[in-house]
Amino acid sequence: MGILSSRWLDTMHKSKQWLTVIFRWFVAVGLLIFILNKTDSDLLWQTLRGFNPLFGLLLVVCHSAVLVLMTYRWKLIAQQLNIEAAYTDYLRAIWLGALSGQIGPALIFSEVARFKVLQDYGDNQSLIGSQVLDRLSGLVALVLILLLTLPFNWPVFAEIIPAAALLKGLAIVTISGAVLYRVVLSTKIQAAMVRNKVSAVMSLGQSHYELSTLIQLVLMLGFLLAAYGLGEPKQPFTLFTLLPLIFAGLTLLPISISDWGTREIFAVFILSFAGLSAEESAAISIIYGFAYSLTALLGLLFLLKK
Image 1 (cartoon, rainbow, N blue to C red):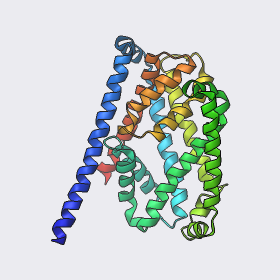
Image 2: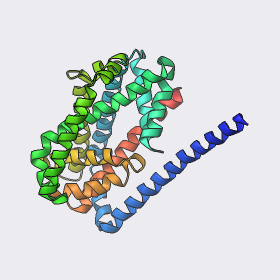
Image 3: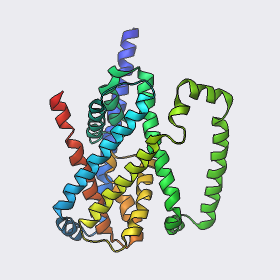
């Protein structure tokens, strides 16, 4: 009876995962159709056809550089948790994770793929912990860049949220952050963090934060390359400072497959503040996403090798 119950629960869990995958595919396709309906389709395709392939090649190189840097960052973090593996093994895990993220939710498919590749190099708790801290490092860097670009992006926030509500929101976030910081500093939590080496790994001054910042900047560079491939943008500096808002939106709303649809929605709205038309913004986002998918497909070489 216990075996049957266990099998039933396992079947239900797998069914739930596949329902999540199907739902996110529907979200991605639905949002892309919505974008096509809200833009001039003929003008969008004409814009896409005018893309310079040379910038496409540079964009693939850019995405590859991001995966290489992400590999190095994860290795720095994992080594502090006693996970010893060669750089090529980490690179294989990262690239296969990116490939897996093209068919399902990244937080499930990508992370599971990374875990499976390196599961023989350390205990499960340390390996999962390294993956969580790896993502947290990237999130910290993104928040830092958001704060640095906030003075330039204030008009965007004012357009979305009334100034009074925005100030109240910032006050709430500040107070909540202070309370959370105080809780984290409590004796019991500090002891647990020291025991699991979390405190040491995530302390200020760690070189993985510098890598995370560089990764965010290279991701932003990718969007710029996609924009320049269509012709020189009207306001390149404004365009560059708006990009962290797109990545922040994708982080807060991971509801589609490989960010398809949601990325285009955010791009069309946010990049309008840089003087780009809806068709130009959608084309930039589509090119950026296609180049990333193409880069991720190179992970098939790792499958052929092993």
